[in-house]
Image (cartoon, rainbow, N blue to C red; front, side, top):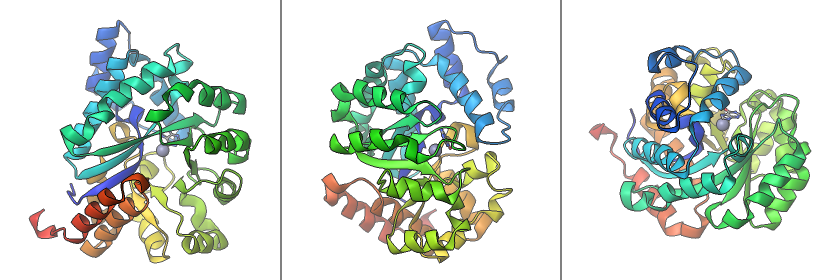
Length: 333
Ligand code: HPA
Ligand code: ZN
């Protein structure tokens, strides 16, 4: 595990639901899970692609019902993240995955916000909340979700786009992103995880996003790479996720290092750590071992995470974190 101070910018809070917590919540809420126990559930974490993961991931969310459940989920993540060197976390959540099951968006946001609001004091972690639209649902459903979130926007920094990518191009969400921008929300989107480089271009040109989540397949398009380098568009990579969801065959073959060498502004993140074999400190360690990254490359990844963070309202914190990374002594690890 690597303890270097870092920001985590690509993390789905529902993807931090560990089997033990899932079973505890199932019991508390009187929900029956179709697994004999935590070990049987863990054995089901063998994914062939993004969709096979999403089926299990959405299925397990039935245990999340009350605001307290969401608070507990976020508290558990923040405790683990802080123990792995995270100083700042920008946390995705999927409101439609809950509202479709009859859990009101206010229950979700207020439950999460309760944990996030005390995270700096309890864990030394500053936080932002990013609401993701499910791209395999309709644009109308995304717009209804944005409308439903209006009473809670003081808790929400930005919008994102996630779920099954293939066949659901960013352009489908042009209007809802325009509406989000007019509400003062920041904009990011998953693109180029399984989808083509054209989806990365659309996310930039049609949605006007400031960061690309994943962006892995950008590497197939040299002109796009050149643009991403020139504009220093941050890419929030999730190498363990890419291995587990079969976007790359092995961690050793992950293009992270080639992407850094090309001059891209890349960051390393955990995506759905309960499912993909590690939190972000574990991920730093794993890429270091698999790709032979040296200390200066790890330092660069950590610096990038704070450069790419939505810390514009707190530049003093960004500067403190950057200075902490610059002075980090790897020999203490
Ligand atoms: N991709 C798309 N949607 C997701 C992911 C992901 O990696 N994790 C959770 N929702
Ligand atoms: Zn993701």
